Length: 365
Ligand SMILES: [Zn+2]
Ligand SMILES: [Zn+2]
Ligand SMILES: [Zn+2]
Image (cartoon, rainbow, N blue to C red; front, top):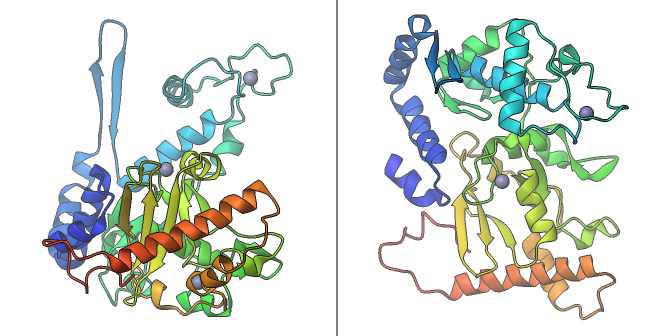
């Protein structure tokens, strides 16, 4: 099971390998996962101070994963309160912010702009109020009918027992979503470009992290990108707002796709409902990856699309339309559509390499 998921995953980074193994353990060896969690409970929480060199020291806090995640997001929310002219790097800002918060000092912007509102101090309370930790769990895991693990954004799989504890916390807000909410459409009625809350959550949950190979940015810190570009002027001619055509990309990799020529990505939902993303570099190297958390939402890719112009259906029309593109952006989008079609055709014609996953493990492109 683990070997199979690792073999078909693609895009393997250290954190992804850890998460894939953790998900299998949490799902299939509930007792072991629970024992590990109990062993790691209160007695191991601690704060350690170690000298780093003559002038600096390290402060290391060991706490529950959700508290550490919250603390890290809180630090990042506070340091985002300085202006662009603050001379410190991100690491230094984080260190300064933690010490200020723990010692009751003011954390302020160190720029020299007279009109910077943060020079007297960042508004910490307001910033901390914006910090939200996201956990996606199946309903039956919350009720105790199942032990399918949940996914803690920015960390990885956590046991069903663990997520039930988090759900019981007075600070936790539970939003009930249903995959079948997508049947009525995945975009907001008033704005076809914006996904519904259900679509947004499910897409972030099933991919878990930025879908660019090698990037592990948590999904809730990413933008949701339309793989085949949305056409604001004529939505029926562009990519749909739908789980089949949306995936998370961090701001950097979203920008790479949008502004740097030569990068191409594609997304395919296979007959088994597995969502695959594919990124081709300017050098022509293609990395194909299975959605990291298919195990959490295996039914997502099986929900019929509500749009009647699924990306595959719209391709021939685009290819047979010789009309002159109206803008450079549109030309680029048309080019990418053709390239995706080309790559798909290439895959269909490509012979199977011995040792590669068998046909029922890979998408029937
Ligand atoms: Zn400033
Ligand atoms: Zn990224
Ligand atoms: Zn769709």
